[in-house]
Amino acid sequence: MKVFKFGGASIKDYKSIIRLSRIIRKENHDRMIIIVSAMGKTTNSIEKLVLSYLNSSKDFKDKLELIKNFHLDIIKNLFKKNNSSITNIVQAVFDEIDKFLKTNKETDYNLIYDQIVSYGEILSSIIISKYLNFIGLKSKWVDARSCIVTDEYYRDANVDLERTSKSLKKNIRGKGLFVSQGFIGSNKKSYTTTLGREGSDYSAAIFAHALDAESVTIWKDVRGVLNADPRYFNKTKLLNKISYEEAIELAFYGASVIHPKTLQPLKKKSIPLFVKSFLSPSREGTLISKKDYKVRNIPSHIVKWNRVLLKISSKDFSFIVEKKISLIFSMLSKYKMKVELIQNSAISFSVVLNNKYQRLDELLKELRENFKVSVDKEVSLFTIRHFNRNSLKHIKKLNHNILLEQRTYETLQLVLSRNFKRENLFEFFEQ
Ligand code: ASP
Ligand code: MG
Image (cartoon, rainbow, N blue to C red; front, top):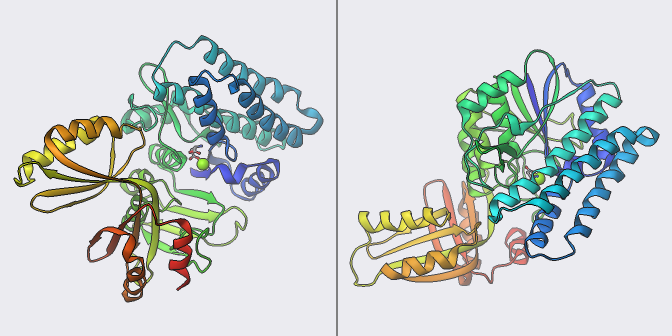
């Protein structure tokens, strides 16, 4: 079995879906699973729709209509005059969304979000599976909601790998070309869950793990894994071959090319991961595997924007050690904060957080009952993996923006103040 994953950018319009079909046709596709994201920026559009709906703003209907027309338009271009049956199917999906919105009694934002946002992947996978059939590549549509078993942590659900593996083995058997969704699953209450933004890579890895796939290929709009984001830097280098460990580190620090959870299920079964460009499929791209390739001489640059830096210190000048650290972490976990960097000294403890669930105020209130806390919002976390002398020279120029620095043998991380903007990054790279 081979697993191919196509992200939103690679299926953003009808032409790119035709391109996808050409890639599939060229490959040996009688044992293949295609995992797709939502088309283009659909997930963002549905997120906005959910917000309108919850704010009882009337324009949510217009937003839904726009999303529907976007998909119907693609269908018309793909199926030309033969679009009536697929149009009906897609119309029925929109009726389902409409019905949910009209009858929903739930109030939890995260739960509602998952029920609706997941339709982006449902729609793209139905359209792509039907299109492949239409052009003679017989495919079978698989509903990930009945295979990927998760907990109830909506918007960032945790996958039960064992139960998921069993159910995937049951649902995907023998030869064939299968099409399923990334990003989504369901829990024992039969609610749909999502695995976190950009989580389709992770889904592809889960399918591969469960079915002992020979490889996973992630098709991207970039050449492969690069040492910097090509939107900010035009002299990026391709990392041709890297180890799982290196890829995990890069993804963890925020290299947006792969979702950070993707590597673990693959590493467990030594399944190689290819990252390739769907624009030039014959080019090599990046291979991630268990071999320890040395990439130490290429510094990689990664930025995470819009983070929160907390400096926590004791009110009575006492040490911040085990008990207090454990108390701090229990609060971080209670308010669903994602911790991205920690640094401690005798009487203070700093953390960089991703405030994904918007619960910072609640956290601060509780922390301040026990500690003194200072907050910097909208900071960015700049990581240079395998930094060298040149990197050190460059970062001197960022001095006024640096709120915190952490250095290990391989990695340099800076927390930069909100004054540090994307333009400054260009300057940094241009030196
Ligand atoms: N469609 C989802 C997102 O845009 C998942 C993914 O693309 O991987 O975040
Ligand atoms: Mg995406």
